[in-house]
Image (cartoon, rainbow, N blue to C red; front, side, top):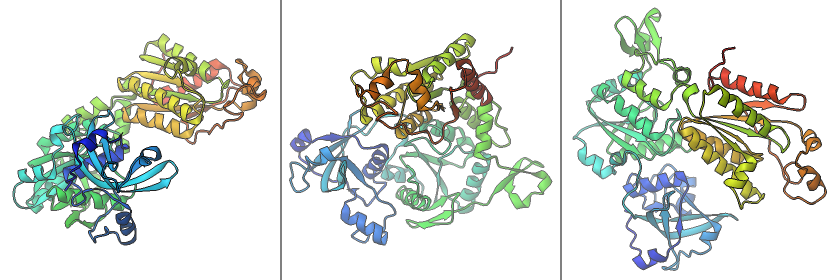
Length: 506
């Protein structure tokens, strides 16, 4: 298991590479033994067998591909048949070595990407970050468990009273020890940062049977059935014999996956019971995630009949009312559309009111101060927008409001900016300033369109470079027949209506 014996001189000269987040999560599970019996990332033979038969080439049952991709430039320097050219040092995002990959297979996926398979061996001190003490290996956890049945719970959301009642009932019925597995590789379905989710789980601990809590780098892959099978497999590696689930009844990795009956709150005595055992007039159904989010967004308390106070306190800490939460307002549109003027007017208005700490990231200023040296190729434009998105997300992470107004012509870069804000626990409002190109050309305050039409300027959005219209902007304004003050009021009204800004008293 993970037994690569690459010589130190080979590793010293080996190239390094930082895998993508989901690959790093898989890497940690491989290194810990949670993906046993896999020694590393799968090669072509195993992937082909998995696709055909749902098992590896040697007949081992396995639910999902565990793969690694490398840039073509790096892959071109590797040779799986050459002992001195088949090692890659895999690093975390800060560049610290995490593992050595001993390449056994490498193949082209497309001109830019290659697949890579091979065994992995841990390097370094095992990682950093919050709650490292909870990131135990399966062998460490199994040594702590009492003999007998173990009920596993994949806690990817905070545990409210109905879930706690289901857990207590299942543990009591099975006479099982409780093992809580908390996914910590990224925001959960509720958008909570992993460290906040762990705190919320600990806040509910006094409402649970005796439990062991473990942080596990599990990520979803967009396939509900395969995700469930993989989770069952990982849970089994940690010693779980039964899994409590909200999905369909499954069998995987030798585990029984239990689907609890729906509970409701009985207002006669304050207990949670099977829904059908409570008269309708005395029955209160569990709140949906959307209802919980709505209360948090508006700053209303979560009701104690549904959420333990300690859990509610943690949720309010990480998700304060929108008016106190970090926010990124991201304007996009053609040059000359009015986005920078509207953005500056919005910032001035917000500074007058004093309701928010606000930072303006103007496209031209950012180009000069943050992205100096970048050109106007697609790659450089994406890099510029991602830098803006990262800075804006950091401002919002600390409860500030960032207003950005680049052209941002490409959808993927805008989605990356949204994702960074969301992962920082902030809101994201995309404002598409949809002033038509012909109107922007008529304005042409900087003379850019005229130069582009004359062939003196290349890469001008709308002339010889495309603008991809946003698919899901929160707000669209067109300044063709709208004054700047009117446009600012439209944006402010949206922010007030959706709780991001306090309403003004006239």
